[in-house]
Length: 405
Image (tube, rainbow, N blue to C red; front, side, top):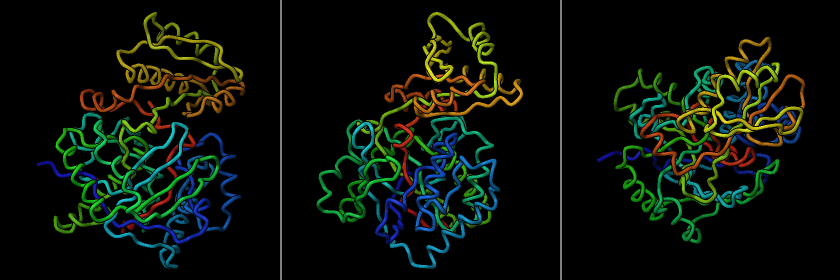
């Protein structure tokens, strides 16, 4: 019988009256909009906040990541030393988050890193949905390698059309302790969480054991690079441990939010591309020569802050089309002096960025989420940045913590 890769764990929650300032959005959001993070920085200042425990990727290239990692780790330790956290032993946290698509329901718990493999042809119970980019791992590893805590922005998905694992908890919230109930900053919506223990946790475990018999138990939705960094560091740690020590070591697990892919609040959004520092007209001309076919998959492109045309790109599948487009854009940018490709979640942000001279944006279509598990099981990972769960402000905010030392 397969061993479930997701389990209850000891979860830390801050004892603060201002949960809004405590919770900030995932570090890999608004990477081209530093003003977003500058606002957050001014807002939280010296307040108790997860902002001080992360490295926003918008600042990469302008700060020393080693210094920021040291400061983040020190902030975590100060919170531990000051007794900021309450520890919820052997628990899950059931979460309801108001997002653009409605209410998204999730379950915070521990993912077994020994059951996870992010390689493209993985046969593990837990698999990546998109290709992992090796050079994106070091900053995340730098934060985690000496960290006493982990803060998750990782969201993982189960294929549960019967809605047997997470959804039954909705009718049981009156039997659970409410842990938090507040508005997230910067338009992130409202979030409520309840502690899941006892019979309620037993019911979750029993339902998940049924799903665990499938070839693929879990597919990573958001935060794959952070999870990959945790996996790499666990492999290093495990090498120096006995089997008995490794079995119970806290770094073997990563705190994640688990969601049912069929939850109405799970909405797959495309991740668009913007290319900076290129001759946009020459790029389009070459694309038409190399990539365009009459029966290809349609994308739109934007210049001067507005949509200016459409193009059909070849590719046997949705992921194949993105792979072809991505390879072309990266090669063209590399041949251009100062050329660069960035990934944008919001249409409005993309249009604004294309107002710059020498920039062009490509709006991609959304993927049918019913194909996710089938594609991962049969064809392996999607290309990097193929899709996103929800809009940028719907991303998971840092909230719960867990000790990993």
